[in-house]
Length: 439
Picture (cartoon, one colour):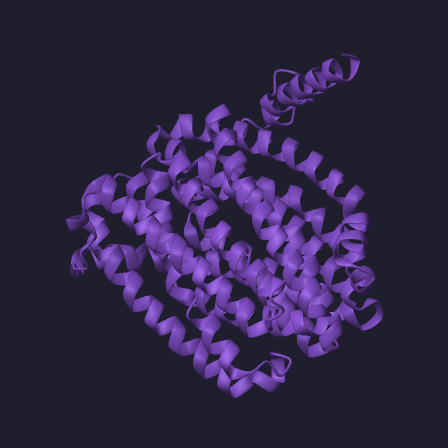
């Protein structure tokens, strides 16, 4: 597991850089200004989620089931990236123009337009980054992500120092970061496999294969990735712009450990795809166990430091985000269970079963958000998310047990010990820390 957790360590550097960026933006813009920054990005992110068709997941399933080779699919993946990016940008512009006052808190259309331009970079990161993972180039993938985060942070810091950081320019910095990351990912794939394989070309047979698989798994991706974005848009309708800004900060900070869980799951893409079915199941179970153990520590640590982090670092104006943040952080453990299992299920389960579970989770989240916000405000929205996360994780675990037939749950649920990579590393770190203190 060391290689996978090494990849996670490099990606954690990226998350720290992004965290600093959110800090600078929040302190410069305040709750209302942050809402005008977060909502256009939520809209463009939602458009990306709906339109990207999970083409990288479709390719992964075809490769895992030995129905195609990577070289067969790359030209078609490039074509899909260009076409889907254009569709998503246009959709964002239309919806943003029509519904700005209704669910974007009155954010200017120019900000929405810049946010829409983040979509091509997002798609490039999604597709090319997944190809790097399937090639086993984990550290290269993570290094590019760090470079992208550094560029975004530098832009935000410069704008903040000279006193010109606005919601528009903050969104522009995010867009440029995504564009740089996506471009570097494609260059990296071209260096690994040769530029010719990435030249866009319409292969109707390969396209039909990708779309056939996508029809089954894309509803799953939409449901999972759309959840927090849809939730923020619902909060924007039911709460004040200030409360929406507070909740957007809670979502952003809580997403960092959740992204860590997702990143760790991505590190398992290659072995789960390439190994025999039995070995892939065994690997995924142990991987899920280690991921969950790590996330439990992260969740409790995150709750413990939530108040000082928000109040001391962001300022007293953001105190209202503390309790929602603590609740959302507890969902990290659920995501650490669901994410690795989803990679496995894409290979061994029926996509429509996975999609039904994920859609159910989104509907539960949306419904509970509406119901619980009436008496509890944004705390109710956080509780709705927490419940929906755990329903999704437990449902995916049940499906994995049935699809695998002999899922080694007894071993995965054993009591933590030093034999576990995460626990062993924790003891090693504690020992070194003790030695430093005593000496």
